[in-house]
Image 1 (cartoon, rainbow, N blue to C red):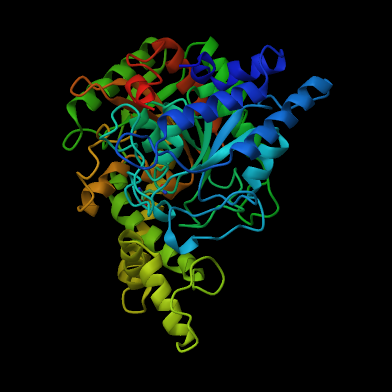
Image 2 (image 1 turned 60 degrees about the vertical axis):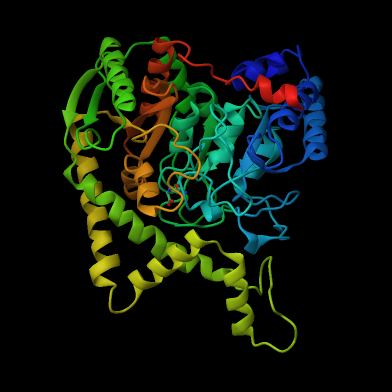
Length: 508
Ligand code: GLN
């Protein structure tokens, strides 16, 4: 494997700025890697990408090389390639959201995060696979077939942003963007042995992110190191007048925090272990890796205490009422008139008929399930008992966080209860699938920050485990500091960071 593929984005950026390597070389190496391992959706490829724009990427790389050669000010990540989850709009590439209903749609504008990537000279390689409209935990709900975990191609890479995390894990891209509504950046990060960050709600613009559940959705970085995630976070974060929920406050100093964490200890940092996230349902190897991570945090000088967040047990049911309710409303816009697919418009049918025919064909089973649950939860007869009650539970969860953060600087838990499960294992069991987000959902409901950092592999199957670090709203830097200190103390993960796909490369 080309050495350029295994470098962190920070090291790539250093070499690019020192002109030891060109962005065109780096970009070409990644395009070749994609060619070698991504496949065409069959069982022997990672299938992280739904669309690769080689020409566009090489043109952006040339522009970055020129900017660096000119010697003027360029952003720290200029020239570094990146993959973008296919639910963020791009003018030069399709945006499908993993759905048939957006087939053929070309967005007329770039998402703010994409515009910021371009302005900073990053090189978009393509769009990554996801569960349809970001609804799922495995990418199996993609209309275009699942992505596969680079550690074991028979297993899921997590979801909904499995494509973004798999691309980073497989060396197909040093960085990627994900979106996290209930865990879709952190859980794929955990099961692919990569870093995934859900920033504080409102601190990264949602303009151009196709809405799933607007009060929960948040874009964030996928990377191979905590510092890389922080560098990307600074590119995409900050106020945006195009997003009405955008927070007009300075971005937390995430890069400084990642650097300080990597250099220093955690003396005096109060770390709370959430007692609800342990026990039954947690794979023994995941619990053991987590316990060991907590030991390391203690050795770094952190004051480790146990905290109880009793209302977190309502998080999953509350989420599965609130998210589908918002989705049922957000997805009403896919009406066959405005975007993408239109079925049965032969001049004999009414608008209503064309709409329902199109939605019948265009949406997959999970999306339909969510639209039905959400429509029911919002209906006059059920609103108080379902949606209203879920919102009250949400308030209790916010209060649990507030109380916990009075005595702790950060909270920790396993990111997800198990390692990557086999493709197909939970496909017909939505409730089992929903459990993958047990530990990540409270943060979305409360709007605070959290990330997942690799914490070794599970002794029972050798697959990656993630440590989740949660911080209060607008204190994302705390999570970065703790994660960077932990990452440095651990050194290299026990498994390879970029799993060997040599057999696969050799067959192509
Ligand atoms: N897995 C969760 C769901 O299916 C979360 C998805 C997400 O964060 N986009 O809703």
